[in-house]
Image (cartoon, rainbow, N blue to C red; front, side):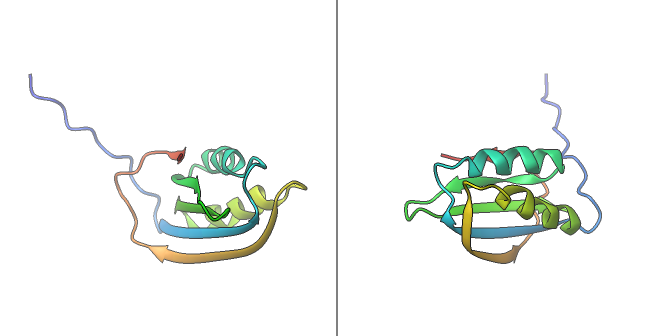
Length: 103
């Protein structure tokens, strides 16, 4: 039997993809887990990962208003202390279906 082609969910109108580098006290404080839970709650896709230098890298995709709500949801915690946040726009990935924690 031929395999049925799996359809990708439609992107929200005006969806964007952003790449973040987050510096400060962002490892071993639940940052990646908070990012995943918040992103899923906001129906965003992407991923988050720790980097060897102690920072966190994250790509997030969805409506810009939802992404703008994500960052405060992650960083408003007494254990997390963001000292620098760098962001750049990326092309949207229409095949992405969920938000995941990497490594």
